[in-house]
Length: 500
Ligand SMILES: Cc1cc2nc3c(=O)[nH]c(=O)nc-3n(C[C@H](O)[C@H](O)[C@H](O)COP(=O)(O)O)c2cc1C
Image (cartoon, rainbow, N blue to C red; front, side, top):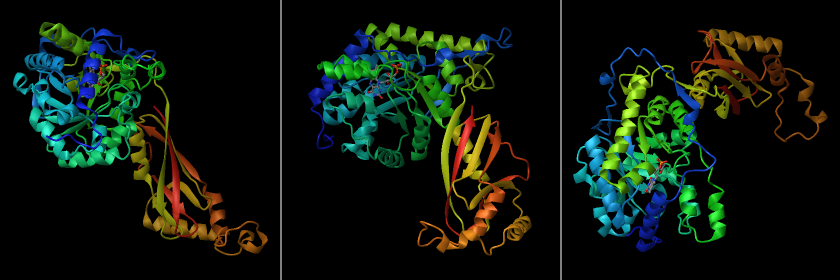
């Protein structure tokens, strides 16, 4: 394998950084400060009579075609330095023994120094569970090719490639790669060309719902929202940065990021059927259960597994048993025999009450005649779905004075009647507004459209529709129209979705 990109960091630097990362994560308090995962805001509804047997509760699942005993992932951490070899072997043996998925650390160092392969090559210790290779997405902007990615996957015998998005970490590192421009297109190209699934993850500051949607549109097989409240990489880097100024900059980001619990809920709303991983600060089995109930398919834990691996295989097994044991009990106490049941209904509630949200967007149309009744109902429904709001209102407004928004029936003969009604009420004839010589500051191509303005005055510029269960609460025959009243042209409709 050849070193990729013209400005690859010296292998020694990469290795030294990785060794630092392990040491700092083991020795220092690297949790985010002044921010939490948000799981403390959620509570399960306790079932005093669950009507099931604890022994029947199953945490089994499947990821990328491989069976798992629990939806638990030992998140991507390390590789490439001598101390990583023991850690990865220990984690791999435990993952195999407990039927858990395992992620490996960034394989960029493997592109630079093929001799570090033994610290990553753990498939023989974990032959049956999903094994995930890892690479910084930004490396795709630094000359790493699809062929390089394929080589990494093949060498590690991985089931998938995880791309991490870590702009804040790169910005803090003296040697960081900060050109994230045009990366989504490269991720899309990689997803199309690579033979294994591509997963996108953050490293502890979170992937917001707009990006979740864009990543799934780009073709990723899964998104790990990897939110805030757990390991904070600005805190890790703070301990490495020699200069007090840079350490102070890192310290300012101790509470950066989006709480993990909020990210899961938001991501599930915009990606109802996408495979979602949750990680970032998940520290016990009840939090694993909360992450699953909020919508995650897999739950990742990193820092605690690193510290356990350094202490030995027994500690890793104990941690796995603790997480899965409490998950199983939480399922029992909510009457959930399997993982789909845990996600059903109202098993989990936001103890702080629902938080209203406002999501804004715009739609663009080109009219072809006047009047032109353009049925925009489906587009509005799509925007409501994308906003993820279940209960609330959507306000739909034309940004023009000769294009109206109205609710009525989409029946062709009726639309002819509407056109004739408009012609009767405000005929296309003489209007003061059309006496262009009497008006000031008009454009050279100013249209004579007094009739269109008068028609717009009668119809109005907006409608508000209630949302129930994530759907527009319209009657059977009701449709939302953008009504062109002037002449064929481009039109904008602003949409504001409000609710929870
Ligand atoms: C020592 C260490 C090394 C890590 N290296 C990587 C990495 O190479 N690639 C990656 O995607 N995430 C990496 N992470 C981030 C984790 O996968 C995870 O997203 C993050 O630590 C949050 O989870 P936690 O709060 O359970 O630790 C690393 C985490 C630790 C603790």
